[in-house]
Amino acid sequence: ATVSVLNWCCVRAARHGRAGEGACPLGHAMMCGKRAAGDAPAEGAKRRKGGDGEVVVVAAPQHMLRKVAAVRQRVTAWHRATRPQLPALKEAETDAARFRRVFDLVKCVHFPGYVAGAPTAAPASQGSGEVMTWQSLEGFFAALSPEDRASWCIETEGDAVTRAAAPGAFLAPEHAASRGYCSFLIQHDKDAMFRALSQVPVPHLPYGEDADDARSWRYGPSIWVFFGRNPEGGAVLEGRGEHTDSVSHDGTWHYQLSGTKIWYLRPTGALVKALQGSSDPRLAQMTEATRLKVVCREGDVLVVNTRLWWHRTVIPPQATPSVSYARDFFFPGTAAGGEGGGGDDVLNAGVSMQNVEGLYATQDIDAATVLFTEADMPDKELHRSKTDANCEVVELEDGLQAVVSTRPIEAGEFFCVPESDDEDDSDGA
Image (tube, rainbow, N blue to C red; front, side, top):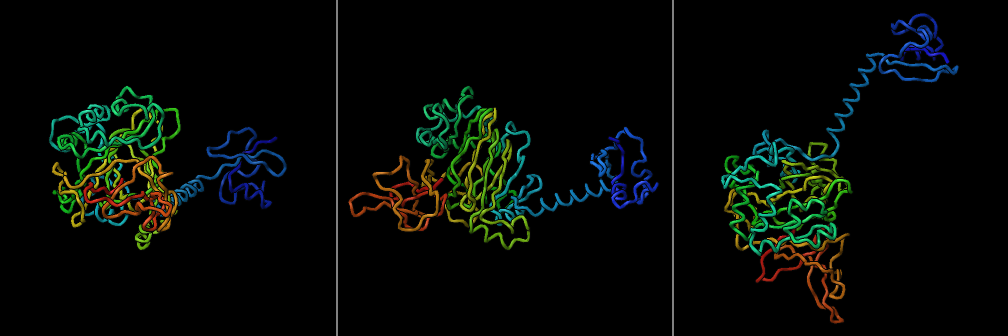
């Protein structure tokens, strides 16, 4: 077959019966068949089959390539500007006013690279000079009070080794081959709380009412620690299924100490209604079906209200454990049990959190529905609350004890029974 090198506009001319007329209608030097067979095609050329069976090499003119590239850039920019997405803020460019303006609307903010050089950055508060890393958590957990060590919870099934292993063994650096996702709380051990706040890279976020006074925020009584192992070469490790949390605080911020964790978020109906009036199309077009993905890497911070965002997490395969810690916070004026303070005086003896696996609804449930009876009760503890219980224990006509919903329960919401006066308050987890 004869090989010819043509310009894009020359092909158009050929299709209109002007091939071989000697001059390109757009001013190009060569027309169809005028260049010697076997010449190398121009950069960006594409091969086409001509009507007479010959192979034609077509090169678009540079001005057309530039136009196509410009259109692609505009389309890409339009998609980025309009598709649903969460705000991603830079720590150096965010003050208290901007944070509150964004978070009050969206209830979720991502700070990529909040701490540069994590996780070996110097701690932001004064203390022993030590910096908490994932390698130091084994010793830190071993030094906790028995009450805080009892908060150890296996978030996912993981493997048999993880379930059989003692907490210290799973946290040990040499336990690299194990696979699982666990958590524990620091709350009753005041000395441990002080050590943790002096060693973590970020003890508080400086976005209170006064940027210079982080104590205008108040914190819950606990620091949550999440530790996941998922060795390379396998599938992603799923956390708990999609759910919301029955909580009274304004939000929780999570600092990614090591490794990577992926969050999948979906707005609740209440949040969708609040976002519909936004002037930002990325927020206004969100629906209850909108699903967002946030990849948290070492040094990232995710601030989220888990009461208003459906959420689940996964741990991708990686050589380093995925470790994060989290703190619940209350804005000024929010009724809550936490005490003021972005520093160390955050404990409140009258409030504590429970770290239990819990049971949650897999679908919407009507009020007055029997959830389970004593005969088929799953072997998991129910969350308890004085203010936001959604079910109760009753006696059925046949004498069996049963747990019955006291109000409509949305899919993903944890079952929560009333707490008696002599028990500690729990907001759920």
